[in-house]
Each structure stands twice: as structure tokens, then as C-alpha cells.
Length: 319
Image 1 (cartoon, rainbow, N blue to C red):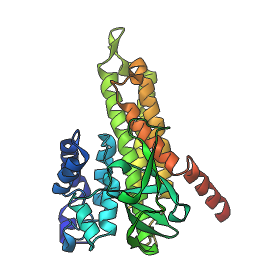
Image 2 (cartoon, rainbow, N blue to C red; image 1 turned 60 degrees about the horizontal axis):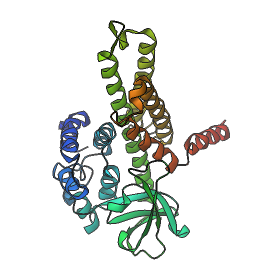
Image 3 (cartoon, helix red, strand yellow; image 1 turned 90 degrees about the vertical axis):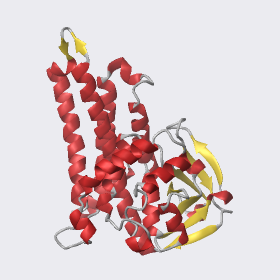
Image 4 (tube, helix red, strand yellow; image 1 turned 45 degrees about the vertical axis):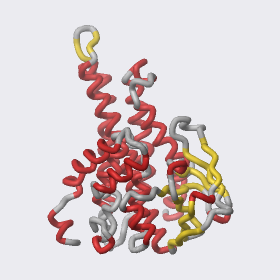
């Protein structure tokens, strides 16, 4: 652990992350990238020798949480992960500085020629495509794109034809293993942030909406629902903090169960938040549906329940 990490805690970094993300909101993708980079967010995990802050992945968790809570439409998680994985190269430097944008195709492999679930691919310069146990960074200039609007017509993910795209760099199996582990942690934090934002909005609405002379939050059924929402959101937050720690053997914990639980909990919290907002929850004025779409898109990208089924099979085999 560096002296910088000893004097700075991840929770101390959260306030700065929120301020930078709020500044980036509403700006163009390129302008937002520079704002986030200047605040040190995109290079948070890049070693100091390569121009980053040199902090561990725990310091990126508040960034992902804030991005989910504030519904940031920017590939911040991908930018952080790839800047770290490509540190020491010109590509990593460009990502950390915000001069270039990259995304990751969460579905498919290079050998398939067609990959999908790439967030904000239409704005990216590069895309990471997995290739067996490794991965390749490809130039988007040679990629044919088709938007997938089935879950989100406003911010669609994209299918990418990568058969003719030039390969810029390669990541080996060891680097990809670490990248996937950290991606699961940050994606868990993002969806937990979405749940946190929905809970906060619902508590505010229930406390100020008055019917029959008293606020809705005075109703016992509403309090039970809010308590359940808080329980699930806190359970995911605790799981994320736990997976950041090594196990009793000094090994990294598997983050797959954390991500599976965070997605399931976030979906429940978000849907209940929309429900508790009543008819208003189904209008464009209450943006909870954007957060729910992001979580649903992630779930679909990872196989729509595949994480839970895989965990179940592993548990049965181990029994």
C-alpha cells in the first residue's frame, strides 16, 4: 500500500467523484471525458509512473457508485479499467487523459466476428473484444455498428462486426483475469449506486407527498417497502466491500456472486421505487426508468440470469 492510499480513504474520494460527474453531466461525450480526466477519475488506478493516481480498485468503487446513482451516460467504468490494463502504453495514456474513448464488448468473442453489449460504442475510438482467455483492443474505425434498441431506444447498446477491424493491442490471459474481476466489482457498484439513487428519490417523494392529511411515508406498508429497499441496497454495498478484501488464504474473492446479487437487488429496488411513485413513476418526469434500463441491459449482456445459474451449478458440484 502506498503512502497516498494510507492517507486517503475511498470514501474521501467519493465527494470529489460526485462533483466531477455532476460537472460532466449534460456535456458532450468528448467534453465529459476531459472533465473526468482532469479530476483524476479516468486515471485513478493507473500507476503514478504512468501519469495516474496510483490507487487501488477500491478507490474506483465510489466512482462507479456515483455514476450509477447520478445516471451518468458515459463509459466511465470501461475507461478506468482499460486505462489501468493498458498502463505504460500510448493507448493507456490517451484513455487516462480523456483524449480517447474506449468501451468493452461484453458479449461474443473475436472468433465470432460479431460482438455485442458495447456501451456508448457510437462515441468510442476503440473497443476491447475478448479473444479466448485474452482480449484485443480494436480500432472502431474498422467496425460496422448496429444499435440494439430492444431494451433502451434512447441509449442503446451496439452489435459490432469486428471481422475487418485492425487490432491495436493485445491483453494476455493474466491481465484479462484481473480486468474481469475488477469489472465485476465496479459493475456491482454501479448498479448499487442506481439502487441508492432510486431509494433516495423515493424517500424524498414519500416524505413530501401528502394524502389524507399526512405524508405517504407515515403509512406502515410504505415504511415496510422502504425498509426492504434499504436492506437490499445495504446488503449489496456490504458484499462489494467484502469482495474488495482477500479471503482467509490471502486470495482474491470471487466477485461473480457479488455482481449477481447486486443486479437482482437493484432491479427489485428500482421496480419498487417506480411502483411507490404511483402514476408519476411511469412518466418521463421521473427518470427512474433510465436507471432500470441500465441495470436490465447489464443483466442481458451477462446472459439474463446466467450468473445466478452458473453459481448454482458450481455450488451443486462443490456439495
